[in-house]
Length: 621
Image (cartoon, rainbow, N blue to C red):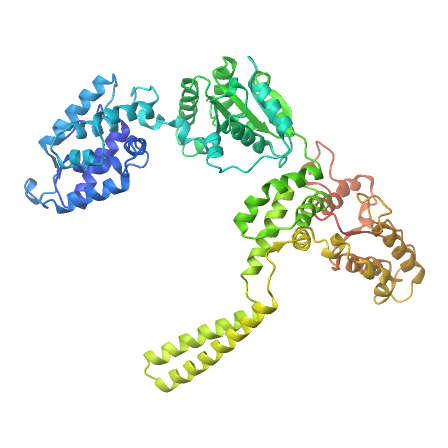
């Protein structure tokens, strides 16, 4: 058998796979066709990458090889049925030629591409003829090997895992921009210009984008890629490409110590070999601090520092302000390599312009249209009612979900038609069962009933479609409905269609609270003043102290107010103040101070208001 001591790990895998392939085809000799099929079927091997560079369809080549192997005789010439596996003299020649190829390329190990070149060199074999028929020549293979290796040599058994490391663990944003796969970036010209200025510096030319989650840090990197793709940049950056590092993919599958470091080192070497043509974008930059570190191993940030210090690696980072303080600033050697660019949350007006720029993409995806009012509502409602996230991200999400909600509604039947449809399906099943049991009389009854119901269903469906000719335009009301689902705020309150309801507020409250006329009038007047716009919209609608003996309806009035304002009695946060008599118990309302147990959990009052800001809060007793 073949000696594996000079084979790389992938070449050894291919040889073992060839032994499995001959059993699949009931052969007992490994020939060059079996080895070629094993090389093509290696998912992480070098040969599929070579075929991709050579623009050869690997699946079609596998099919042709499969046909050759299926039509070859299932001979049992050697071994006499003992299950022994032999190799043909041709395979021995292939291994010798692979050894020669390795020596010619000054490689220390025989890898899968050496075997591939040796199979191609072996003239007048079915494998070589198939490759030649696909347009594969030795000269083209040599060029492809140079391309996928990027100047590396095979110096250890794991060499193939390092080929095209940058392509495996990154995305080329510039290429995606050329292909139109990135969303347009609107209203961030000043920030992109600042990034370009820093990238054009001689030293410390690594910008880090700092801003809250959802303000558009990643979009700025994509905007830079789009400017490079359209050549709308200074000459110093012309011809460069922005590549986004996927640190998760790099860490995933690195089971043994050193795997992650090897992947990152190879990626950095690929960037260094590009000689300044690649700008590396690291989203969530703080994740490189500590990534991959285990028991004395270097983390990713320490591996990046030397390349950044020497100017061999140009990097754009993105992180939030808290994480920048927590991770990057603490590492002064890493911090001094980067120039901070602070990204502020855009205003509502800027967000509206951004939504208008993204409108076409979302209309094409959802197959609906957006009215101008819907875009304004998405920006304004998300700014006012969704307090725990940032613009423009929350406005884009709101616009996206409103379109998705309308599209789902367009294709959803009403409940009565759905029940008729399921009844038709049940009758069809019973009809088929009666037919199989040769109960033709019952089958005829079920068929007649089914036909009658189908006709009725068709009439009702046509009638429903005519009556509910759904408008395929997302309007302000659709956006308000999604905000109502997110926050529990009634749609009418957002759309300001509650004037009639507010005028009759006293009557509505009197339905639940008998008497207490003065208290109800005072509360109603205060709420009407607030809703008419005579108060700051960011302050509470009203603060009331209800004083009176037990049982006169103070708590009940708060419940009635919650039901009136928010159409739900459950929109009431009741805090029993008898539990807060001691001085230290106040921390339960607002949360424990830093350094105390429960600091991260928040308080009963603050958490309730943060999750659902539009509620009635009742401080009882």
